[in-house]
Length: 250
Image (tube, rainbow, N blue to C red; front, side, top):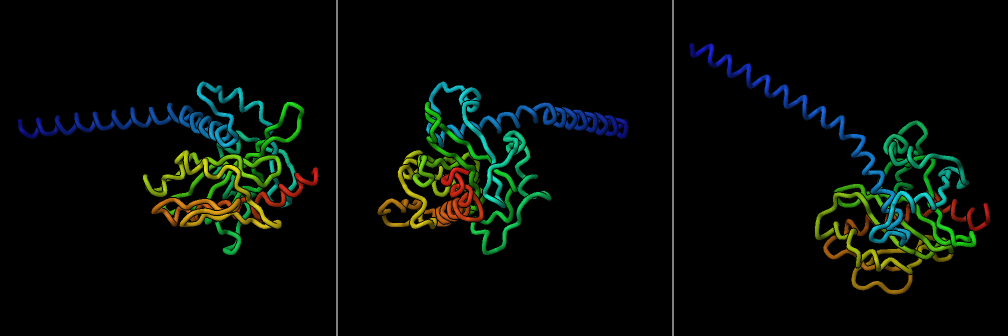
């Protein structure tokens, strides 16, 4: 009798475990499209935040449709065709797949190894059609994680209009302060280039002038990671050549 009781208990436990496993797996499959859609919406929202277009009650999808989107060819610096939805949804594949661009150790100051061959550029225009702002995706290694964000530049393609990070795993209260609105506000009006070279830096002890930003307190490695991220993406191996072509009307 005891053996039958133990066997019955084991079988019931096995059935319950299998059922729970099935329900968890099923929920994951059902919820995955919704999760992916929410991630895409969050990225679009951060494009608007970087560009100063996000306010309480803003219809993200509606405003996002008003933005011109072109793609920058990372090899040539020229405009090319692409799908922003495909970029958002297949970023990892695009950054490591057959069409990606491998970076040498010297080039890879952001610690990302390779980049997609085509990357979206979000262009805001004034009512008369003239260039207002340009927003580009940026990412690079911090202390614990890869930090993903967007950087907005004024029409001179030099002055910072805004910056935001939408995904990272830096230490809360330290490196995690890259999300701090006050720190992000300190970027506004700073200049990326000086004499054609990336000059923006993150320094300890009080930033001075148009090319310096205060580092995050107690997070020197995260601060350095952000600086290297900017230097890479604004440099010749990323958007630097594309910006030069934009200035020339290409």
